[in-house]
Length: 85
Image (cartoon, rainbow, N blue to C red; front, top):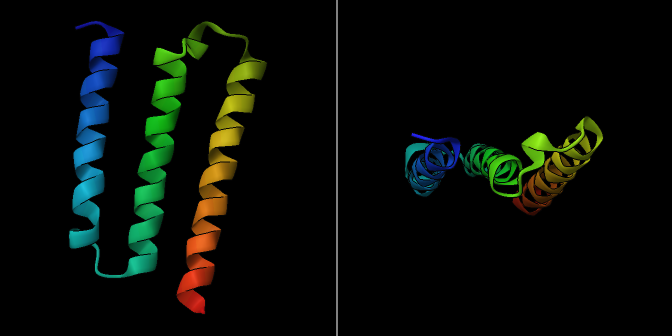
């Protein structure tokens, strides 16, 4: 199995896990954190394998990874603020 096929299989597994998390984790804030962490993993896999950043310079990989993490943290902070209000 080549890398793209393995990434595709991992993305399918992560997508199914994302759908199951809200039923498996009783606390909404924790479930949101898990779902967003899975989204970050999926985003990184897509960026590295489908956008071919694995072969790009380390600076680009770092910038794209930092962008994904910042987006996920912002989304989690927004969900935490809504949960606390």
